[in-house]
Length: 271
Length: 266
Image (cartoon, rainbow over all chains, first blue to last red; front, top):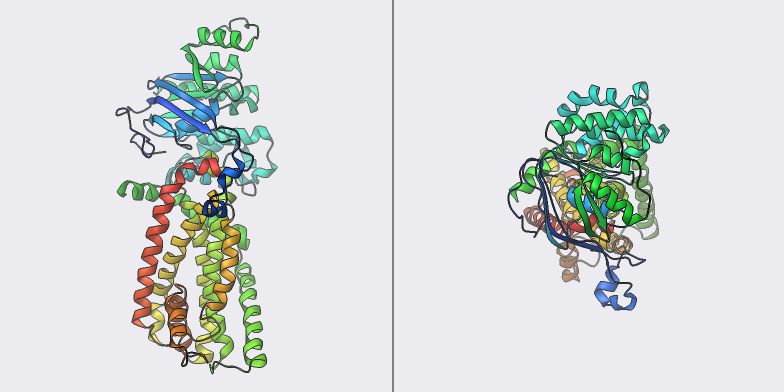
């Protein structure tokens, strides 16, 4: 995450200067080794015995993906398990580097890849708000200023002082989203996490996301829930084996997705 | 380079949070918690004092030998625990590394800083005992923070190095553990660096023990100040500055080179 400038990765050429809220992926490829023992040992490196357990070839998670998202756009990413959806988000978040190609995100990127990623289970909700804010580069004063709004949004009330290990999964996601919602994202990356909250909280989150989008935030949402995607996103990318199989307006892309998955197309959702 | 420094500065509150969090988890918020950690060096001090004054009949001719050993042990324990803690730190925080973007140096740096806090408290307690008993009160105690700061930089540099290496190669921590044990015995902890029984007949051994071991000058200098109440040798201080800068430069450079894949390997 960078403050202001485009997020670039070591060695990758930035295609051009990205605007705040803009996302550019150019010919992005990334594969992962699927060997059973990922940790090589120093001993093997020194004695050069790597060949002894050459496993299956690396599996591509992103295979020559090119994607441009304009500021304020809402993009849904759908696809089978293992199609590269989460890897795409992690690349956009800057967590994993590309093997080749380029990625650039303009402005503050906030990612919500897992419910309560980085929560200390023995610490209270309030303490975790400070830690999470700090993880996103905020200082104490900035978090102090947002604390009441975050606590209020999370609807945790007095439980904010209880250790998060006592929270239900719903409380967990409410806290996680409440924090992410108050980080002034230019680009918001969300992976599936909304599904955990109850419907009322989901609606509240969506309303919040809509307000952010009106203010110019770009949203990238990975989900297996087509109705959530069609409600939230104007544009949908269908990934298949690490490649873009379809890219277009949500209704059209989702019907492509349903054909791909062999599932019946649901009735169109009333706007 | 200046951009990465700005990044680190932006995340200084994260660093503070991590240090506080680990300190609290470790000591449950009480000074008594720190005192527990003093038990370990005291037990070692007792064992080595019996070993070298009773079993081996004190070959070193050091007055207040137990306190002499204690100072060395406290310095060594900071060094050892910093490296062992840093080695596993990135894996311990794997959930964060895999899911959130922030400067990864923060993690091993926080681990070493937590050890520094423990070390500082112990050093003050040890000095409060050693100085009056051994009568080593002197104005040179004022350079102690500088020596500690240099030791911190040295440990931080090595900590960055072993943390990122262990994330990729999981045998680094056990290898480190195996190296630290003989290193401990070869460090001038329970013998004075220039005045042990074989020093006169084997001057080369004295030089090797003093200069081939980067921890030796730190132990010797800190002990000179706290135990002997005299200024550290200038060549020791020069060596400390050089090795601290070198360790930090190498540790930082290697960490920067290797950190990109951390979210994949931890």
